[in-house]
Amino acid sequence: DTLLMTTANWDYWIPSSKACDTFAQVEVIMASSGFCDSLYCQYYLPNIFSPNQDGVNDDFMPFSSQVKFTELSVYDRFGGLVYFSGGSDIKWDGTRSGKELPAGVYVYILRGVCADGRSITIPGTINLVR
Image (spheres, rainbow, N blue to C red):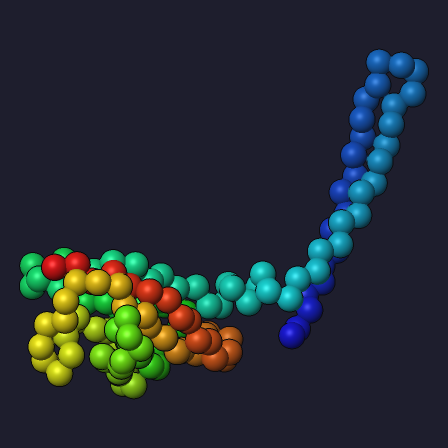
């Protein structure tokens, strides 16, 4: 991992009701190996969708301007693969082979590439409601 370090200095003059004023200089050193990574890899994933053809939340899909999603796998509660997409249109409509699946919680694994070139794997759950 790349370690980011930055240093900042602040001068403070603290007036006193006594005869002497106080002067202080503060140096802050910040180090991070993860904070800046997130700036290039922000995304939003819903936790529920309702594929009822009303035009609102009909598909489960990721949203990001910084991540190119490349793969989506969805599994039922028994671990069976119900959906896979390896193309550029990463979204699931709540069906398996064209047949509607029942309401419930499904597990997904989403893969993508961040704007800084890192590959990511995002596991999670999605609630399908009908």
